Length: 119
Image 1 (cartoon, rainbow, N blue to C red):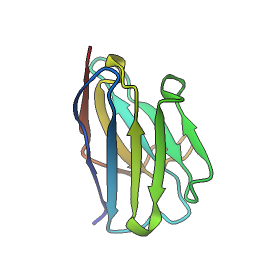
Image 2: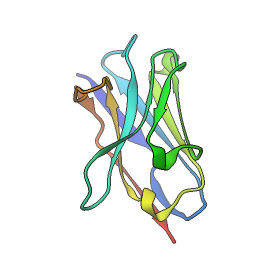
Image 3: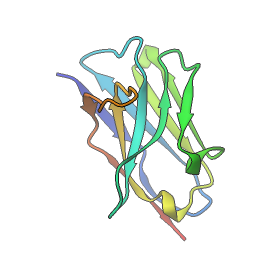
Image 4: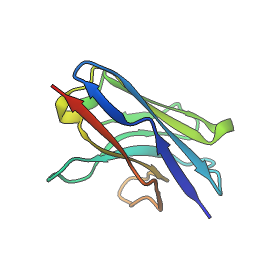
């Protein structure tokens, strides 16, 4: 059974930092991109960041560029999202997903972790 398990969410003041982790079990995503999505109340789900298998290619949605960094440790089957200079508009449930391919919904999703940024 494939599972993606996120951790690291929480409540933080604006300007603060959080680091999300996502551990995959049941299979590896060799050669495939993984990523982080988020969904805020009343808003559509959006892709926040994506990382290739090698880590050499990344994508960030415009609103987080320069503040968030996605990384992965394939030996640990884990991806991370370092979030700095957090803003209230970053408040959402963050989901790990795989594989992340253009135009195709991921096959696997984590349960989500809440990130709340207070002003």
